[in-house]
Structure formats: C-alpha cells, structure tokens
Length: 111
Image 1 (tube, rainbow, N blue to C red):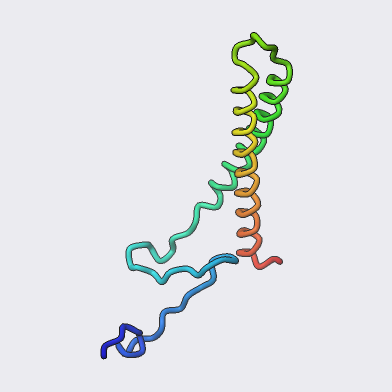
Image 2 (tube, helix red, strand yellow):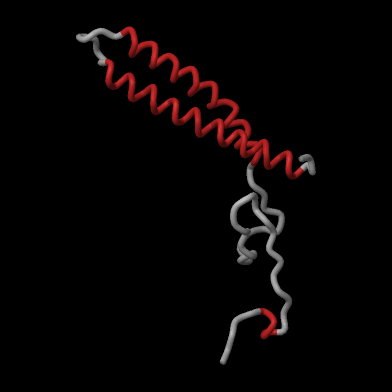
C-alpha cells in the first residue's frame, strides 16, 4: 500500500504556520516567491481613505432621503438603498482596517 506522507518518501514534514485565528497556511506550492508578503500598506491606505468616504456618503444619502418629498427625483427608496450600500461598504472598510492593524501589531510582536 502506497501512501503520500513525507515520512514514507524520506523527506521531512512540511512546516505549517498559523495564518491568523482561522485555518492554516498551505505549504508552499513552489510558484510564489519565498519573500512574498501581503500588501498590508496598500490595504491600510485604502481602508483608511474609504472608511470616512463611505461613512460621509452614508450620512449624506440618509439625510437626503429624509428630506426628499413624494414627487422628488430621485425618490426616497433609491436614496435609502444608496445609504445602506454605503453603510455596508463603510463597515467592510472598518473590518479591513481592523484586520490590517491587528496583523501589523502581530508582526511587530505586540499583543
């Protein structure tokens, strides 16, 4: 019976590092560079820029929807939809920002 474990092939077992709180990182497939890193700086900038943008847009669309009358164009419904969409995008930007800050703090060895 043939098995594909590394011990049977004379090799060492591949080390697997934890990647955050959930799951494990896959062993290298050989196609990515050894020094490959996540673009945390870019993610930090994008989250930091778009969190306030979508937050302000959420408030602006909600206020516009509140002030719109029955015959106004655009109507109240589409403005509420835009406010909800911007609110969800602001929430995603906030979660992304927290994840990047957590990972940066973890890489620096802080708790």
